[in-house]
Length: 564
Image (cartoon, rainbow, N blue to C red; front, side, top):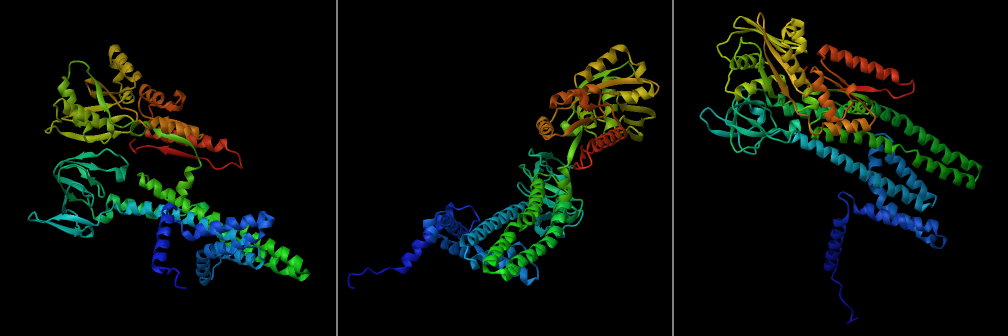
């Protein structure tokens, strides 16, 4: 006895804890040690089932059940307390039944495999929740309120009134939508738009709540709405509403599970009881069959995977700046077979630049034409208008502030018109000036030049004055988005029919089609907004007629930037 070694239990516990920590280091995040142990003993019990001389190993299934079933049993108990019966209850029933029949390896299989499925479900749910949380965190909690005396106080964003001045330092989030009143800086709008390149903002520019001051200058922003009405708050509400809107598939699965599960349980109960009246052998055989029915007929994969899939999908798209309004809309995307693209600002960058400007006749000088173009296009939001205004500024030509502009009107699919200092002025495409009868009076050289610009992929426009005819012609060009060809190729690979609809001329439209790898017969050009609508209706009609009675409903997706 004097030579016996004393065992230090504290040291043993410490070593055991260190071993457990090392083991957890190699396990996937969230995978419990109990599941691993259950899996190991399940595998051992399976060896006892297949190798006769190792039949005693089937008792390892008891250990597997002991580690695998408790978490499932707790959920089953909570479900029964609510007077419901779900997949957890079915799995516990099957495991207990297998143990009573001494089929330990079967009980281990049920316990381990369902525990693994629970782990996978939890991981998917956590990822979806994490994605939703990251969107909610885009909404700041506090703001740097600038008082009347210029002092800055940190206040809750909910206390900001419309017209409040807030200080946005480098790295700060803008608390609410507003207008810059002081400072020039770069704003990271990727959380809202998905565009990674910061945008420069200067006084009088509009900024959105949730975006970040990524520049080196402090901004003073005047809020134009309450925090709950800001762009980021609307985004959060849309995501929350989308997650709560169930798709037809989810509704079908829920209704199916409610009636299906009790039916399976009743059938299994009859199989496990009535055959015993015909003898123990018959009873044992049919009881086993009944338990098998409980396991294989469990709709857990269907009921678990469907809502988790939609939640993960909605959250993932929202993180990329895409809001899908509910599972029904997400599911509808899978039925799209025809995709109709607008051109300007969708397949192209929407960043036009002036390439050519020609003066027609002797009625106007270049600076006069540029000033008139800037005056006519300044009120418009179309990307082409922005290019003309910027080109005028680049040449040092500003719009005439003293000019009287009356009846400024957008002509859908054609251009704009207004009365400037008593003269009726038009800016637009060939269709507009053809309708006005001015294009015919244009010289052959000018017409040939316009055709050449158009064939090179430019967008050709004209400036005309009533009574004087066309006094100027111009060409602007727009670059194709670098990702456009990849998107078109992916959609085509998925079997979608691709169509481009545009109000631009044939040359510009076909140039974009060639750049993205589309056949020229997939392009329709010189369309007004109404004509685009008719084309969409026509494509939708063809899509519906092409399907058979039993085929899945085919949908059409229109992709555009909302202009024209």
